[in-house]
Image 1 (cartoon, rainbow, N blue to C red):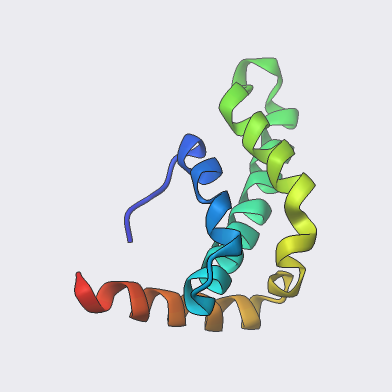
Image 2 (tube, helix red, strand yellow):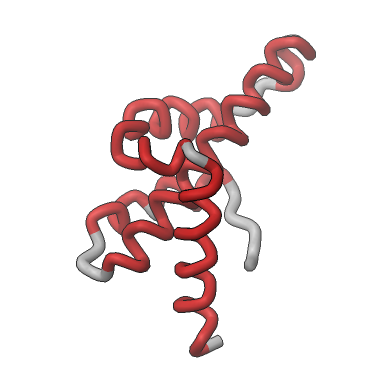
Length: 95
């Protein structure tokens, strides 16, 4: 899987409503993971001070916070892993 930068995360949001359930749920699981990672990074940056601030990361975190209810079930790491595995298996069958 290729890494997705902060700017790319916002481009995934329309897929939260994808008709294909495997894609929709995989993106929700992916954004749940990104949400957790973004919160951890924000906490670290707060402890490091203003020199570590990144505007794009702050914008993404605010948007993720606003959308949390859309992937609430994937706060559970086990369910998240299952959805991500299904998504990756599905997406990489043509890769």
